[in-house]
Structure formats: C-alpha cells, structure tokens
Length: 76
Image 1 (cartoon, rainbow, N blue to C red):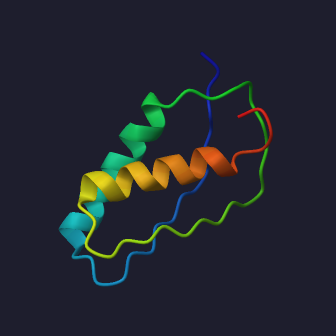
Image 2 (image 1 turned 180 degrees about the horizontal axis):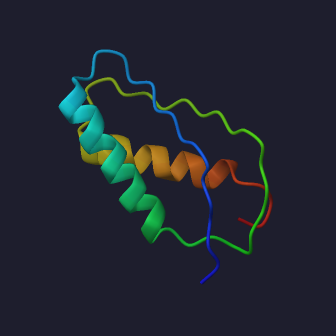
C-alpha cells in the first residue's frame, strides 16, 4: 500500500481540554493510518473546517479524516 507522509498536522479545537485534544490527535492519526490513499501526491497545505458542536471524539476524528481525504490532491 502506498504511504502518505505528513510533515505537520495542526488541529485547532477551541475549548477542548488538553487530555481530550491529545486523545483526538491519536484518533485522527489512527484513522489516517487505516485510510487508503492512491500513489504519493503532494500538497503544500490543506485547510479544512469540521463542525464540532457537541460531536463525540469518535465522530470528530472520523469527520477530520474524511475531510482530509477529500482534500487530498486528485487521485488520493
């Protein structure tokens, strides 16, 4: 399976306590690890916005992974 290299991923979730933010980051990383991507593509920067109003960490992580996959360059 082709690999995806992420140099930096910044999540901004205002009001989320540090322990839950750390858990969210782990969940997003795990979701990206399981995701399938096409051959290596390049993108300098991708910005996404995911509504978080009352969503569980599971739902929020899944929404972030889905949004990132949608924004990958063509073929990813």
